[in-house]
Image (cartoon, rainbow over all chains, first blue to last red; front, side, top):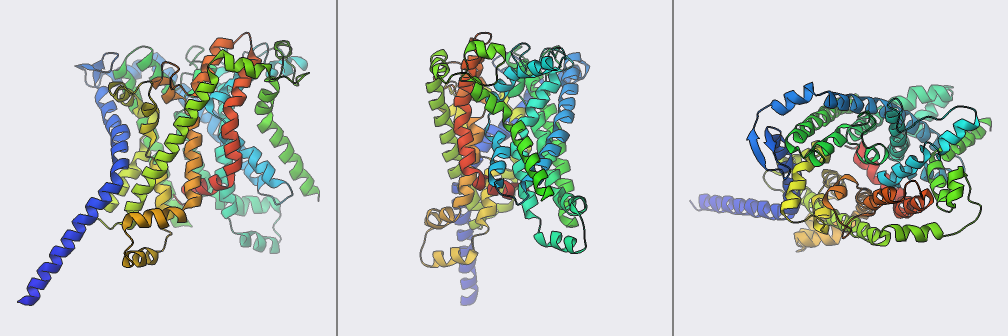
Length: 306
Length: 269
């Protein structure tokens, strides 16, 4: 009899403790939950909601139109151009960024004198803001004052309209972006290289494997999870580019650099169409979701593989 | 020996290519207008005139101060809020712990650029346009920060926590006296990273500032380009140098911390 009372009391105590723990935990968590709720979850749902409505320029919904924004988007020549530019931009920037950063990480992983200096130099573009970086390149690409055209002229090649020719503008923006991306990718890849155990190389050396052999049979395979991670992050970042477009080209010429975020910005803040801008934002969300999903799926496999 | 020579050659060429744009900007910031127009690479004389002109062209000092206030507030806010959340997830056994962690981390799936339209309306309705709160508060909690600190807190031995509790150390005291001090390297990595990213932010400050009160220096640069283009690229470059120096110095000083933090976040994720 008394034992069961004790049991009940213990259970009550346990429950009380569980409730107390929950309340304390929520107290610690509430600032993060409130901020993320208000500025990430709520706006994401609201964006989806907006995308089914016609809105005024203050973002008030006027009329429900279902999927019409989406249907219109896929027929719109401007949006198709924007999507094409977005994918081309990823294609131009991502592989080049990864290859260059990998090259830099490999040469900066050599144990020679003065290497810390080079590591700082190769990381430096992470500390350069998109506005400052793009402004420098705006001058470098300048049709008459720019260094690039001066160099071309010096070797007898005529000027290139880096930012005003529809054939060149996206490439010029990509070059700027690659330069800006190198710092971050370099840091992560160098970290990945340094995580590879020395023993692997030593036993390879004993087996008489040369430099290239080691590079392709040890370094690259061991680095593949890191390479995969930076590829996905760089793709996602490329979908979110905005600042360099705003400063270098303003989306032109002929929308050839009108990447998706710039297109969303223009639709909402220049044209005042929050509804169709929201539909574009949902397309962006879906794109990022797909690539994050791939990362999780393949990342999972990589872990098992090791 | 020959291999070493090759490596130095490659390192040197790469360093020149990577630093060229910044070195050119610094060089151009000391040139006269004629020199820039001529396409010179090195200024013939050294003068700070362009820097003085840059401060006159737009309220650059005010913008720099704003950027500093905004980046510093976000840094402090993120460190406090993310560490509190991570602490609860690691040290307090409560029902739904995994669910909450999953919920917080799932925000990694939401790109800011896909959610900024309603945020703009929210900030507009709250009357936070041209206010520091509009520029800072939305960034006080990030999945990356919570994740990074959770990984860090999990390395603190559970026995330490239990014996501290036995000695009557309250939860909050353990947070301030043990959890935070033991995590200094990761906290500084996150601090540097959040300061850098906030200082460099472009799209959001462009939307939520429409006068000079709280406008950040990145938007100031855009104003300078439209105010000075065609006439004074040397002045614009002086502005660029002033904008990129603070973060570049921070990056160089904090690189080892930052590298550890980013690598941990990236590779163990």
